[in-house]
Image (tube, rainbow, N blue to C red; front, side, top):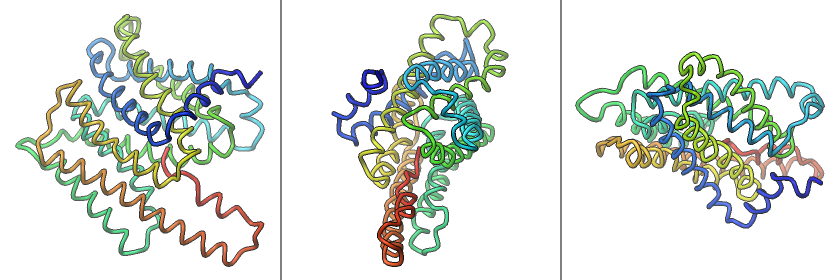
Length: 322
């Protein structure tokens, strides 16, 4: 029976943990896995690690959520949504992990976070909304100009590509969440992302994919930075407002810098730490300002609509982050 499925058991267990703790665990898991992966780059390369990570995560999530073909064809356009989400995930993972090959993880995570930040600011027309934009711009300036040597252009470009893919995935995943129950859409999207990354990963890694050490690291990264964060965030977003979720996930750049220091030995100077703090603060501020704007929109909508109309409220309450 479905009541005893693995996914239901995980949801039941996660339901006993405070929602902010779930989000923070997901944040740490994401960045820990990102810091762990480069340790096997000499054997498999970034593309090989990405392929294995997506493959293992896809197998685990498909076993947990058991996506059915009937679910993918029940609503028109569902297949296109899943394929788009998978393509964006594959592009994001490859760009992100290749970027870590060139510049420190904390800086990659910070630049990547500009994708969700841009979504949070999209459509802003108030002068007050310029505050987080200016704060983020100052943070990026500090990141790019701190220290005696400039950051490699290739690493910055890859991190920017990861930010664009992540922003696109957030928009697509919001649509995917309304068309699937549980994590069926996520499982199918990650499985497709693994398929897309296979040619690049196999070509770069070759027999290195069969190295036991590579398989072990990829498996750990898949669980702690894909399966657990996505599953925990799914449960947390059911229990806390999008504003709170957005503020908590703003800690990702700082977590990336911390794990980059502890695991990879990537030391940042104080202006770079200040830049990371500025971008994270800008994201939290934009999330809070956006929450106030959504509340005002709901008040105006409720004063001009009939009591039974709930569409505007449902759309306003959609999470703005993945």
